[in-house]
Image (tube, rainbow, N blue to C red; front, side):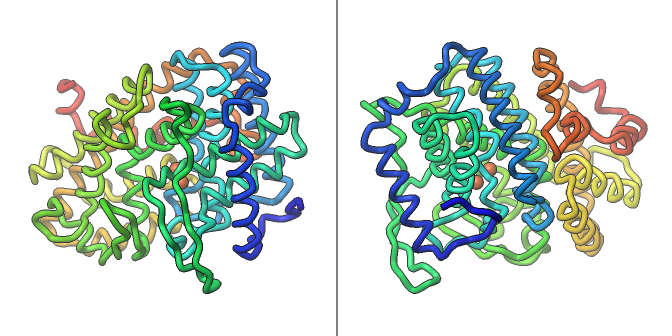
Length: 414
Ligand SMILES: [Fe+2]
Ligand SMILES: [Fe+2]
């Protein structure tokens, strides 16, 4: 049954729908792939973009807004996913049918966060990935895709979280449900359309935007997955200690960034099947993020700055570039107050880290702007949600002036 509004059903109903989706894809994934009606790469990208835009129009009609999404999974993440998806698949050389599915699923993989808070899903078997898959599946009923395409797109969204183990979950309705890993290998080869949305997602868990995006999650105490399990995020003060986890005994912002940076390689379970242009973009993002990590870890003050001006500039960066919604605005203002209360030394170290992040952000956006020179004009608009994504991706004028005027050493460096 079609959802008229974005509302959660009881978990038992949605879980049944997910089992049905899984069963219909997993029994014959390659047969479904054969049914994807795509001739070549150009066709894949053009058609995927038209469908993505149609989905956003439908989302608008369903009155979806990003006001209540927590700030790391809102419009900012979605704009960067959209940007990364186009650049990755337009420049890279990948199989066209998988590009078609992977690009749509990549751009929309976190849409389920509208209904299920990313940090509030521990006691659910239907999580943000699964509910996002069901929503998009409903929307695709009205659009120009065939049944196999619809199932594969929904499946690729559900599978983006890349569960490695089977887990028994005690759900909030008292029922125990099993969460199995999704099928991502077919005939001993990676099933690329499942990996592509994961790639897109990983590109925003890596790079200067991720430093700021992760910082925005510190607005509330929540539980986050790190290493092997969910950890209660302790106070802002504890998280901002500019040390590694070994030194503090608990996860810090720095250890979290480092965990993501150091997993960006082909030895890691998540990056194991990266190839082609993905490796190039991934490595570039990683180098940019490591510059902030290394500077903070060194504890050195590299830049001169006025504290009020820096805090103001960083807050504007969070609001206009990283999460340009009400939720980003509110979060950044709360964090601004918390940041001011940190001790002088910690504040100085992170102030340097923030400046470094904005400088690296310029490099990130220049890189993606260059790639987007190949885009058709209409791709820059996400209907109803973002008139021109360059407004989000290019560092806002205020922060740009701050970097240009105050930080003179930098330009000469790299
Ligand atoms: Fe996600
Ligand atoms: Fe994501």
